[in-house]
Image (cartoon, rainbow, N blue to C red; front, side, top):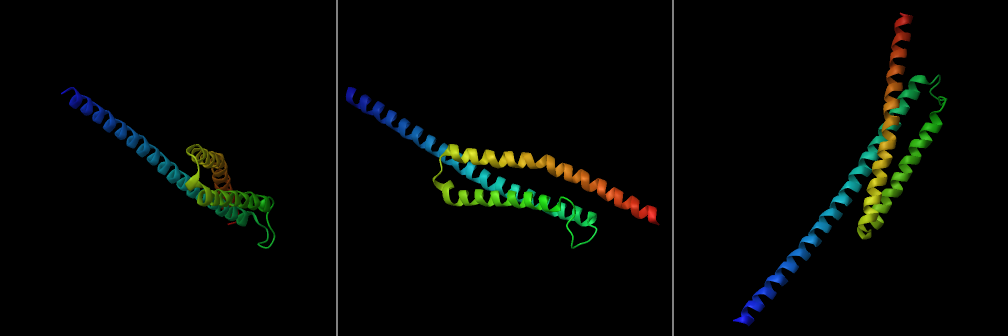
Length: 148
């Protein structure tokens, strides 16, 4: 009778340990999958923001341009900045493709944080660009209205 209780207790402990190990592994897997998904989502959002910024800059410079063949003041620098951001994002996407599957959880979390920081740094610039575009649209309307 003692041996049966001992084996039952040992079996219960073994089942509990296996269940704990499975739970930990499952949580790590879910966390890793979530980090990979966040990484891809944030890369997509940053790319969308950068392309949106490029389009807005092109529209603004088109309005300010004296001649379509001559770049407006600052246009080249703005294009280079956006292109630089897109190149950096491409490097990040290559890292995701090549290294993310074998990366540690910390590396994945750091990569997600870097993309989030980049988007947060871009947000005020996009708002300023919106404000400048609104002011430019208003000035153009007033100029057109004044001419008529």
